[in-house]
Length: 250
Length: 250
Image (tube, rainbow over all chains, first blue to last red):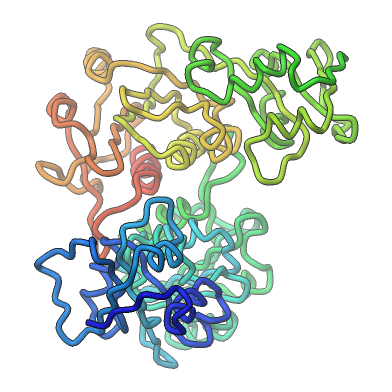
């Protein structure tokens, strides 16, 4: 256990820098805040670099912190690190889940420029629940390691591997492995109910306003839509993700 | 068109009071902010009491504002009314969608103490898309007419009727009408896939943390769960609502 008392300490400054995407990208780490998220992170200890806690923070007895670097810091430092309205005085510096070059995932979610951090977090949580093997974040997708996404994933960022990649390359590779790729679109698409459940599949979802780019929709095996029966114009992308993933996995 | 120039004008003060649930409950009205929401409101003109706009606000030509009271106000007043970070200078004072005592809905959503405004808005939007006839908000459910819920409903609060009610009475009445009521629970429940799609059904969803109260679960015809295949502990309540409503309506 190491103690830090100054908010100007270089390590504290470094932690605060993790509030920016630039620093998270550079270091391959991110900050998880609060008891639930730190507990989820500790279940996969390889992902935890450091735990940060305060004098008055009560750490649950069943947490295994052997071989973990622990920093005891002042309330002022805890406050300076927090991005929530009700800080709990506990953080972990976590390593981003590394993905090998060509993972042999059977159930894959592909995301094209999903922009809202809360939506992305909910999609990650839902994909984890639906037993998806991995998620590919295409260009223009919000950083999954920002505080809001990590929080709304409810810790699923620690369970499910995330790859940043070029969607065209991924679709080609999945095609090469005979895995059907389903896009989502309003035109040139069939009702999702016509797609049967599959052992292996990839599902491609798009931006909140613009949907999936036409160039990727042309590469899919089939494009699906979810019927709208009432007066709503569309479904939230995380809701669509949930309905389609659960339908396709059967 | 009437002009108001002072933020202290009694009518302006009255509008601002609509930021509180107490005033919304008392008057049966609420404030909708932004072009998209006001446009959705105007599609059901009975629901629009007043439109509030500014000198520089450009109102789309295709809006039909005949027989609508319009108030032209200063930027200062617009700012004082806004609850968003990027005010668009347009508001409507709307009437809450009144529901008759015993509506003969065939597809019904029952909500037990859903607390997050964003979740409730997304549920309303999804229920509207899924062709649900009406939603019953049980005790402890957040006010559907707060700004965040109205916004995340994307205008579906104007399409789908919302009733505040006692869930036990509703379940009894639905039973009396031979409409099957499905609860959601982790114990004493069957996988949702075992429930077949139905012409008429009621679905009961619960609080984000505690789920549905045991007293209501005892009154249902069957309780359903959504299987979790991965590491997530649970699904977000709006996601669960989407999967179940689309599954049940078939």
